[in-house]
Image (cartoon, rainbow, N blue to C red; front, top):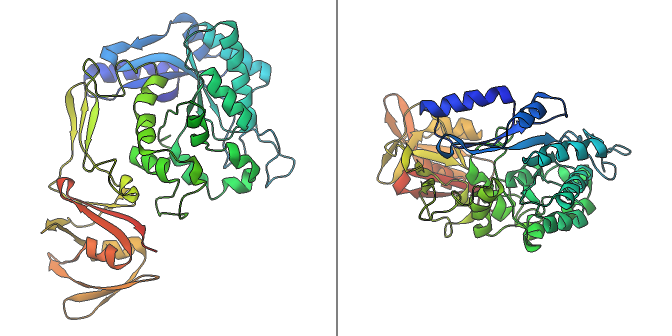
Length: 412
């Protein structure tokens, strides 16, 4: 989904897709800021357009931005910020303006997706959605983008109305270090409240929110089921009662996301008659340990039955807490061990190394020390990456099918 596309950029998508070089399917949401902007003019002149260019482009929705962010204290709140007395954040619209924008797009047949992070803006948007759904009922699949903090009563109301929270699990683990200072403990009851939504019978359309967050969706899977940062903190998860199950996390990135875009009849699951869009991964999603979720590697990506990506497994990958490590010399694999330049590893972690003069090196971290044999090749000193990380207390696992060393949370 590309949320907030200026109408003049639609031709770029159409040309790219028609060229055959752009393989991604796009739900282009028209940017709508006022009743007289170019987005408003476009939707007045064009009916919703699903399934363009062999189902590669949907133009069926508008994007409205209702407030700002938690981090910048610009999300609009019902009560003042806990760490900024008297300050409520910044709503972009009055209630009347929001009602008018939503009704305008809705009555033209468009789906409405509204960015709302603070509980005041979420209430404002739910109110606006409720009005149009009551006055002109239809299968609208109205979305609230982010839905990060809402009064519990408003969460229940949104689910009852069929409003879809389009949330990004990774936000909870990115924000957890500061959000309770911003909003206070009481408001955490309705913050990033995935389990509350699901237990009420709602669904969640998940995503990465790239480029705000890293684009890797497997970070979102990991956050969904653990509510931990990629370094494994906090132990047991942050408000772990709100975790998703693995099946729910998978649905949130697949069939529920497809439903949220009116595409569940052709996308989101592997069924005869649906588009052959799928990815082959290198480990069992349901059975691997939690920390390995963020290190999942895509082996093959297929769109519409066409293979559009295949991982080059001849080159080993070291995935450190879900992020591939880069090296200044080519790594290699020998006997299911990945050898990499020692200097790159020690520099990346900020640990000390000492050449012992006997073909070994001592590596010292904050809480651990390990002695490793070295291999000197083409002027570069190599070590076994698994032994390096494992010796410093990290969890490690080698996956042969993808030639990947996964590195996870430090062992306590």
